[in-house]
Amino acid sequence: MDDPHYLSGLQLAGRRVVMVGGGTVAQRRLPRLVRAGARVELVSPHTSPSVSGMADAGEIVWHQRRYAEGDLADAWYALACTDDPEVNAAVCAEAERSRVFCVRADEGESGSAVTPASGRHGGLLFGVLSGGEPLRSAAVRDSVLDALHAGTVADGRAPRREEAELPGVALVGGGPGDPDLITVRGRRLLSRADVVVVDRLAPRELLDELAPEVEIVDAAKIPYGRAASQDVINRTLIEKAKAGKFVVRLKGGDPYVFGRGFEEVLACAEAGVPVTMVPGITSAFAVPAVADVPVTHRGVAHEVVVVSGHVAPGDDRSLVDWSLLARMRGTIVLMMGVERLPQFAKALLEGGRPAETPVAVVEDGTMRTQRVLRSTLAKVADDAAAAGVRPPAVIVIGPVAGLAHESE
Ligand SMILES: C[S@@+](CC[C@H](N)C(=O)[O-])C[C@H]1O[C@@H](n2cnc3c(N)ncnc32)[C@H](O)[C@@H]1O
Image 1 (tube, helix red, strand yellow):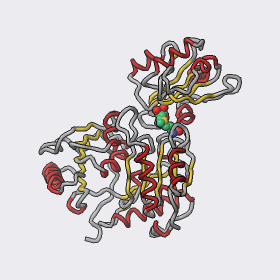
Image 2 (cartoon, protein in one colour):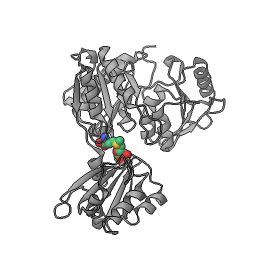
Image 3 (cartoon, protein in one colour):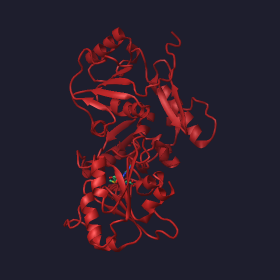
Image 4 (cartoon, protein in one colour):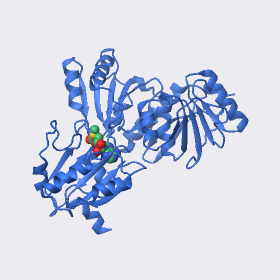
């Protein structure tokens, strides 16, 4: 058959989607399914840190076990993504009997549905199918995306590998999470990567746009959870670059704002690997902004300090003078501060910051799951606990945090 597929847009919002297998295919496919609002249930004994992070964040439900007949009951759509062909075949067979469309990752033509190479640009979502040539689909998709980004018209056939080879490592700030908030340069370099080393807080949806042959290395640093050590990450960047690959190190926000980016630059420099630095939009300022909190405002705040909450006040490793911060009148932007919020609030109150100082806590900023909590310095620890606030969140302390509230 010349044209074995019919391209359709599925309305998955609120509908049960079952994914069997939690490896790299899951890592690539899940963000788009979640963004579409699907009720995704993952069946897999193991998974990668970024996929388990999605389960921890409540974005998907993870059944930590092997697939069993009956798992597709009431599903609208299924994806068989294990590395065991027998399991994938069994999932597809159940799907066939239950009349559920099913994608089979290891043997596309055996499934009843295939995933197109998809691209997203300014509210436009498009897919490309080529009847079993995924590299061609990805190349056409990349060309269309490049042309959309450049504002030109694509011919749809230009192979992405004709681009001049890029050297070394690009350290790319991915912005606060919404895939539209990466820079044009960051996105362009990402589309040319051979290897992408990605953090948990980087815009994960962009991974779905990568060609199948692009290697994705998960450097997930889930707060207070599993951590790939910085040494391993540095070594990976250097080894891949020295093997002639163009490596994009995709990080959340800006690489140099509590992102350990400069450690990676130093390690690459020492190893003689060239680095291109692409700044990103930091969550320190962007996340408050999308929640209508300006970090400065004329006549209200003439100073803004971005502080790490990685260690508690009084901890030997702390480099922060909390008594000095307490005497400030302007804005404190506290990052990584959810876990120890009661200690930070107490230190500021004891240092003289007024109890009524407005505080805004913005969780999952720029994401579909964004939540904003407004409180005061005296009450914020209790209010955040009551609301079940979880990382990642940016905490803004100061009069600016009360501005939007007043205007509402
Ligand atoms: C290790 S720091 C990395 C910051 C990053 N380099 C940047 O410039 O945004 C992680 C912290 O950034 C903040 N953060 C990052 N993305 C966020 C988001 N989408 N919503 C809320 N906070 C976020 C949280 O405070 C989180 O604990």
